[in-house]
Image (cartoon, rainbow, N blue to C red; front, side):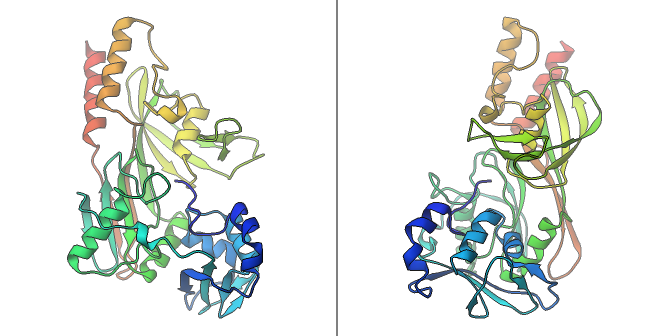
Length: 354
């Protein structure tokens, strides 16, 4: 998941528009609005908005507050304002929302559940979740826009919709809200880590312990800005905890089940690289070469064949459970292992048997 600069101001935008945004919010466009729940407990507004815009950052939200562009009940507030029950909150920016970016496109998607409040999708690997720089179409959101249009439903996917995201090459389950109330209710569960989510991953090497926990702050890598890095000393990044359990061993590769106590960008990928078990075929984290095994031509050819079967990092969002916003009953879903990962497992088993 990457930061989306359409949601809140960044440093460059703040510097270049300082005069405009201080001019009593003149010419600003509304990007986001919500009414706080009647049972809302006092909470700093920068933390509150982060619940609903997890693809942004607290720093960007604070900058937007300092610029006077977060308005509560018609009055600009600072980042330490505490949200109260019934507060009407708006985020205003100097540029119009990119509503024209979301073009309905007839793209096949696997819908496993849908009602008036939400939709659960089992996403294929290779599909970007949301339009952004370099990927303005062909995304899951474009496909959903077409789906809703075909059903005659109205859904503003810029303001409601994505409660969480998974990487382009990660397959598996996602829930999308269809109204503001559902977004608020579901986002709170994700923020408080009350959802039931398990990931399956193939990692290089023979993981020593059958079960374990990886703890370490995750932040941007100091040299490779395309990677996230684990800072055990907590000097940078955000606190992150990953629990894992070994499901099957393939001598040079291990199939693990992961439960995230936190939800940081590339958390599983960064944590397992930190302990020396990079995700299998994870090009961004140098997992797309034979990191473990014998140095023989036959083995190298075998690995090349498996990479062709599984041409992406081996990560799958296997389960998703949450409380429904209206019925208040738990919904639980399981996504079977996708074909590319299943075929890779068969290949490994056959290799070890022979």
